[in-house]
Length: 439
Image (cartoon, rainbow, N blue to C red; front, side, top):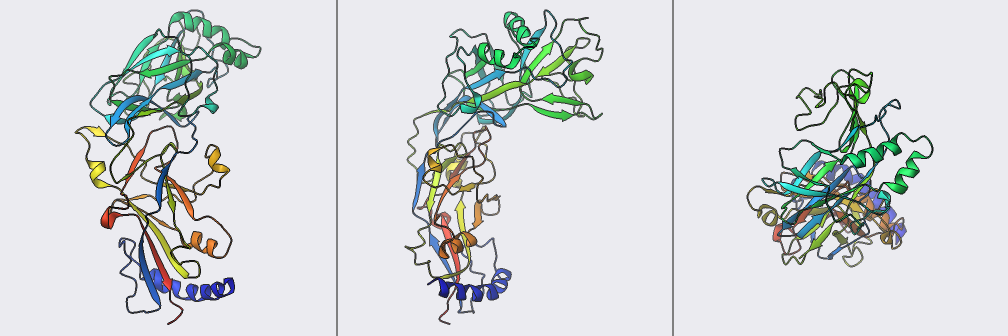
């Protein structure tokens, strides 16, 4: 059989240029392929072998972290608590905490999932047990002090928040910061950080930036994103220009003047940023029994679409495939049926993974094999799987199954609601263009 396939592949290559030049990627059924050429056959096949499966996920030390609570009519109640571990790394090794220095927690919101007109209110609690950000996942729960040390409010207009931590905590943190012998390990063993817990009446989930190194318009480097911010007492340092090696960086609701420069909310005082040692979050979901025909996915590997192409059952093992595409479509009705001012963020792409039985038992850290982008013309995701099928035909691969997520697991919660098998023209499709060797 393989000899026959190899010979037919030669025919495929000869005609491939003709086929490609006559195709129209905007046509979901491929009807613009040369209809008069009887050697070319285009089959539009419905994909019905689809299931939703949960895979192992991780939520620690990603690009973002999430916190909040939202009642989604498709995904049920989604609640997320963030966990933040303080560090001692700064931009300059000369940074020093003086006696009486204040310490602020800086939070930078990035996106909002839910009611964008509402105010997200969080209570900040001390974490009371040692934990590892790299080991955190959607189910992580850590012991916290039941007494809140304060509340934080965030709206869609908030670009950053400065929350002053208790002075007793700042004084204790100063001891770890100025220590010269094993400071990092001592900090890990004794200071466990904070939990950002959403209140029950919240109706929005906020995605926060972690720290990043940036430059202002003058080329000065500074840290932005969520982190700690140290403000030394007045007259305690000879650096007249202030924070982050004198770059004038500071955080407030008006931290950016619109020109890439930053306004220091503590003029005349030495200030600098301290990086968090790590961040993580969990996701608790309730009332998740969705009765619709659509396929709701999540980028956190909690809800993955498992797509089985069933090549053998479709009689495609010995066919000469010159082009094969999978088409998935957004479920427009489910997506658009949101209350006014409510918003589901999306990544703008899907991610296709191939996973063997062993890989499915652990966190998914491999790269996706395909990453089709969202096509606004027909609200679809189209991916060319020609080589994938041909590798299976020739025995180079045994994979016929994809695990599909709604985007990169980057710390944001990014849903995607796809049209299911009972969606008519928008049902999932496999379009096969093949050569008929009998003509």
